Image (cartoon, rainbow, N blue to C red):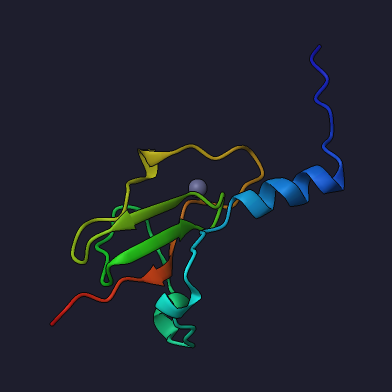
Length: 97
Ligand SMILES: [Zn+2]
């Protein structure tokens, strides 16, 4: 029988900190309350906005062009207990008109 060690709270926090999008220059990003960031998209649906998307269930991040399909359900597996795969816009990439 395999016993899995339960990680200490500090380990969990450290791991979570590593699983967020990163940037260097604050002046290149702008915070917004646009509702587009609240929508959760099913795997394989078309991305209406270009940018970085985050899986709600596991924190996996991908970058995608506008009009391309978000990764399908087979893109990555979730461990038991994790929420389902859904993609949420994390950073909107605004192209030139
Ligand atoms: Zn995921």
